[in-house]
Length: 85
Image (cartoon, rainbow, N blue to C red; front, top):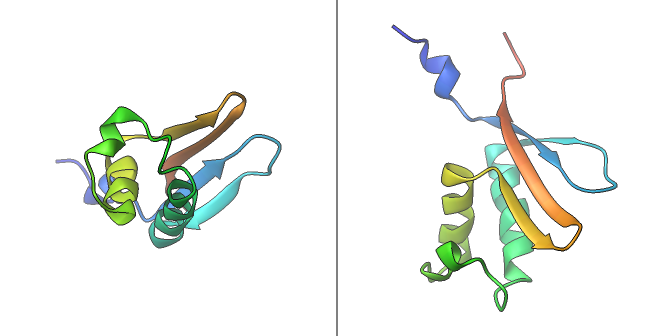
């Protein structure tokens, strides 16, 4: 039987161009994505356009993706990490 700890997504490492890696909690990542998405509502990927709230868009990204291309050379990537053993 697999350990349920393997599927916990409590912490994430976030990567952005020309920035040091950041370790964020799930709540902090949600807020970061909401901030980015709030500035990009006119230029959303097609899969996000079906959601009518920024909160739903951000939750969908966390649940289904690990990156968001913002513009050429600009991106946001996040990966679940376990900080404790």
